[in-house]
Length: 122
Image 1 (tube, rainbow, N blue to C red):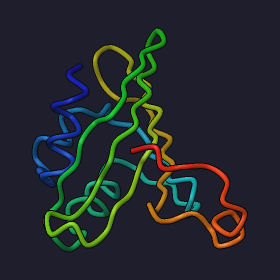
Image 2: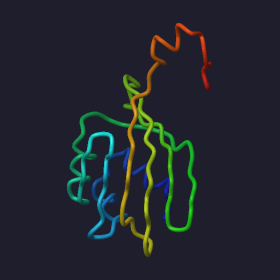
Image 3: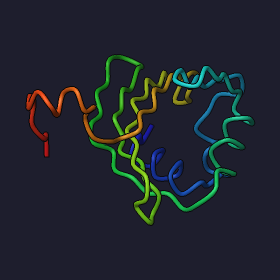
Image 4: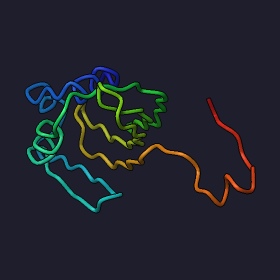
């Protein structure tokens, strides 16, 4: 499975191509919002989300049949920014399960800024 092409199709909201990556009984969990989707529901949630999206896969690790990705996701107008960590289980070339954790990008909280600890990664 080409994990980079998968993410490109997700970001471009290509419903017809997205379906082809998944096993028929696959599921997707978005843990941060406590949502469990089947493939059809996931395609609706992903492809009917408003706006045009872009992003960059920043890291990929593979452990046996598990892909772990960290992807920076943002609208093309760059008004928002998210990082998503995905655990993608692949069996026989198809995605069987996805567990994702979405985080809003932002500044450190005031209490840490006031302590003047830490520094920017980039």
